Length: 332
Image (cartoon, rainbow, N blue to C red; front, side):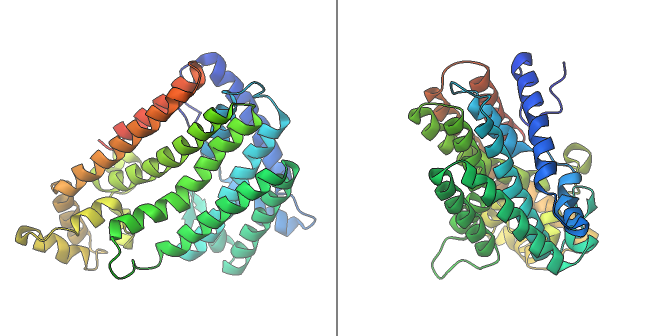
């Protein structure tokens, strides 16, 4: 039985089969949750869901639940839907803010409909997520509210320059932790809590989720510079061309060396020109900042793995450790 269709590296075949079966139930429930009284609203709400995705966050809920006494509980499936609906809602808003035309190989919602419809559809999915969270109890509502606040704050701060005297690298890491790490942390927390794990395991998995989620996003930033399109599946330098700040670039910008003058000049220029982008990529690939960013991710992945010592030994812990290893190695 292949586990290649799972977004996490699960070596144990029995565990992989359980996760795959439960994820199928989540997928069916998600399709039901985006249905509205209006066919048009249903179409808009289902647009990005139908485009697919790795379903990493609900899978993490299901995997974290395996550390508890009742991983098959209905509340675990509900929590998995909560985090994926929240994630999908954020994508609708992201695409409007980024003026994106494509998402997951299909037209973005704002391109398929318009900005107003995309924003309101995102709001609708947040509302559906909140309705489901209410079924999980008051504690879950508080957690969801805090997570949503961090996600939105991270999204806002991404478009705001660091304040006077603020370290741009620290600012960026805070943005990534809010936009990406917070919901992944909540995914692990929900799985542990509603799967019946101990409080110690719950706390360890929450911290693990935030660290590994943030590190995974930064490893994506590194691959945008370091890999070729065949290896990564995306065009190298996409973030550079769009002026998206990433950790390797921010670390390179710290340089005061005269030999980096050309790189800094290119980073401040229009990189829509292919030749300029290629030159900038070449200079960044040879710059110590790239290795510095890699070392940061490796250190965070090791930190995340260390937290997993609180979990009982077994296939679920092995899978979580393997994911941390994957985050570290994919920056090479």
